Amino acid sequence: MRLFFVLILLAIIIETVFLPYPFTLMLVIMSVIALGRNSLLPVFISGILLDLFAMRLWGLDSLIFLVVAALILRYNRKFQTGNPLYVFGFIFMAIGVYSLVFYRLLFSPSSLVMTLVLSVALLYLISITSSQIIGEKKKLTV
Image 1 (tube, rainbow, N blue to C red):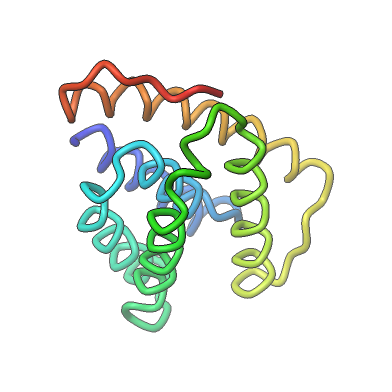
Image 2: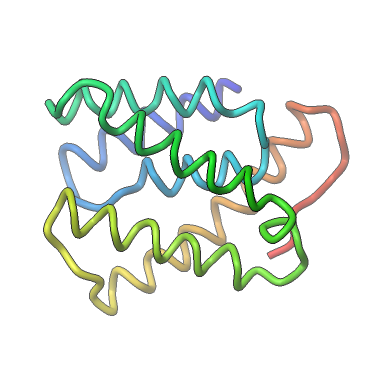
């Protein structure tokens, strides 16, 4: 769980200081896919921290993150299939809408490639750490 909070803090710092790209949302999506209901409290806390660092309305990002988490948990069977197109489609859609609303940016080819590479890397990293957190040897397929 420490690794998750370190990744969240790193994503918040990168997102608020260096690059207007929703790294935190991508990390939240991957953690909800990997950890399920166990990730709701860290998702809420990460939204509050992002609001504090980005100086936005307090609770706005945490509300958005919890809605995304609820959608993922509602359609959990589709996200857990061996076909990663559902996962990547949802990630592209969620990040596209979030970037458009908060950063007023549409997807460029470089951000599409960055989203694909980061989502595969995060899915692999969180699947490794989630098996250590939960105690299961279940791996997510990419």
